[in-house]
Length: 302
Image (cartoon, rainbow, N blue to C red; front, side, top):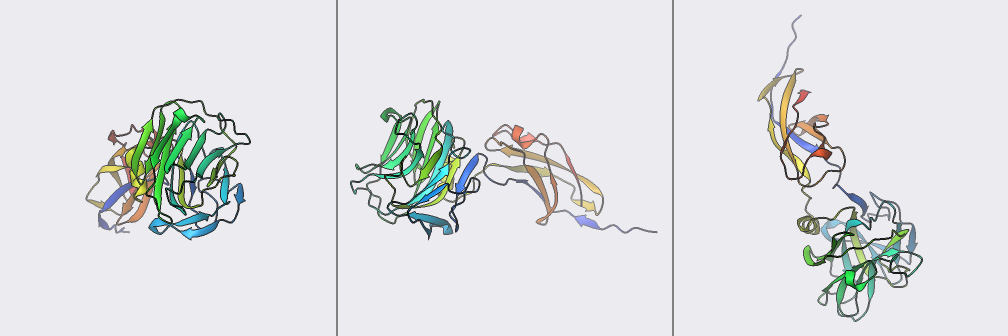
């Protein structure tokens, strides 16, 4: 009996199957519900939040006066190091002379050592970010030109041994070196201060928290709705032709733009059709950022 085998002209591609940016531990998109993914459902809802449209075709939540959301802090807010990013649409003018609480670490006491994470708009027309509960660990930038119902992107980063940074609309507005020993609170609030007595009166969208300090270029990319450059396959060597049902060997070279914290598979496709998913060797989480790495050859059958 003779077996027929098809000769295939190969148009192979390879990519890393990355589910999400490394270090993302909380992401509230407000697409019809208040659950975060990753992250939990809101622990408590105060006032009358309203779903709304947001930039880039995304959804948001309008937190009118007296409205705010609280989430469990455990696993979602690492006060030793991290980055918080979100879109905000204030319902007030930047020079209205009032204080508006935007994001805070919530605790049942007003002691600075516990309430050590606070982002708010001041009566003097500035946006201020404070950690450690003391003025020496604070940054501010003017928002006097902010207009009601105008969307802005805001981000803050912090490291207990390095310092803090504040970004508005993708640009770094300030940074400061400071050190503190943070105390983890039980919850955090979107749209309110530590006890909910002061609220934001603003819309929020795409609230993200990372457990690491992100680079300025990464924050700028997110503010422009661009994908983060995480890692990828930068070179591939494979036969130009293959016989169906017979294995071929593929050589790959990869690079990581930033540390990878978990395993990632390499997806092999033929004319955009997936044909194999393999775990690279060495594993992705061992790759040194910025350094091209030769992977062990991969054998697949077409």
